[in-house]
Image (cartoon, rainbow, N blue to C red; front, side, top):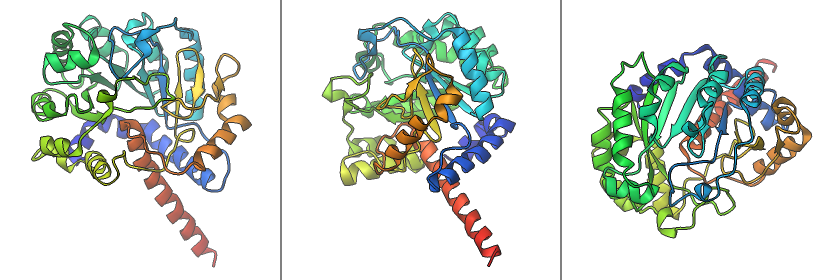
Length: 362
């Protein structure tokens, strides 16, 4: 991330809670290096508040069987209290489509009132109906999934006819407000061979309008609840990607460069140290807790015990040790890749601090 883009995130990076989270995360990394349980909570909690959705995406199965939501507003308020006590910094509100919940903004406010940075992930169809809520709930950022530069491509992938025009309208309506009057506004393309040839047009169209343009390769995880079954939706040609970003700032982005290099060399996403269950956690709409964003392993449920008790349980510690012993992770979500880089920096500073301490005792 370049300095220009980094500066756009200053309201998050310069917040008191972010500074505290660096300290807590560093202590967690240090404890993990000594095979000890974490002393603080995760840096980030990703909350799927509903699996109801108004899209039928080719890379997702959630919309085929949308069960009722299980967690209530009071449940989320208790979870927010626990996240405050554990030192959580970042909360991501996702789904399904979270704007389908009538209480989504009170849920968001449960976390923002404690100074946590909250990001809302949305397909954008309902933005135009919720401009006031998006602006006044304390959100730090809104990330809109828009998967093509043209209506034909986006609607083919998202399975929602006539949605493209409405999503674009919502983005532009929110973008009209001054940056101090709204959250950071980002668009994100879930990238595959189905839309990669529109990436240059997409970037040049949205970069002047929004605060950040993100790309994220689509993931195929057969054991995850949300994995789709269309093979064509899960391939990505690195040469086509490289051609599309040539001459754009994306070509200098470390995240994108690492993706292209790994796809060329191995045909897989980059491998990196996994911090699942240490710096991140995911919670589904019924309170089931997963250390990994892909929801491989269910650790427990908030319906049975509080989040603090579950986070510090022997059961969670066993899962953390299993994850640490599984080698390097190859998921390449924006969140996990960023947290991996953040974790590597913390590991370096922790190790450097330990060497200085040992040196001073000799």
